[in-house]
Length: 112
Image 1 (cartoon, rainbow, N blue to C red):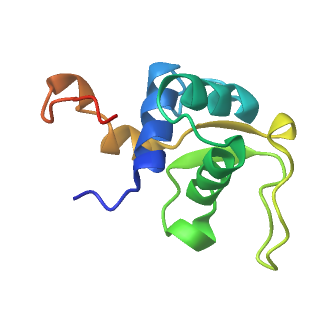
Image 2: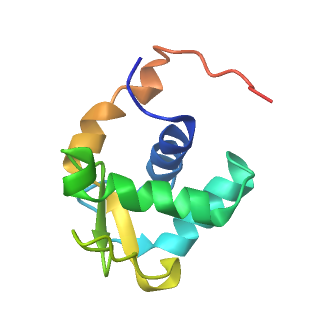
């Protein structure tokens, strides 16, 4: 309904849970990826990091949901730097996307 893949929703929720709003300092991308793996998406770290980088690339998403510092790739398809070298936080647009998360509009249910 929102056009996001499950891994993207899990990343956004994890970043929200960590308090990484657009007006807060950046945190290491590896911290976010580890949190997502440990709590919400027990799959490979590269798939999570790739999804997070994609949400931070304006040329791929139109509007970025994640702000990133560091090398996040180029328009020539150069790969992003390793997650230990980049930092991330939610963008201002992402705050609108998940702004009503505490209103329980959609009930959370286990999906495993």
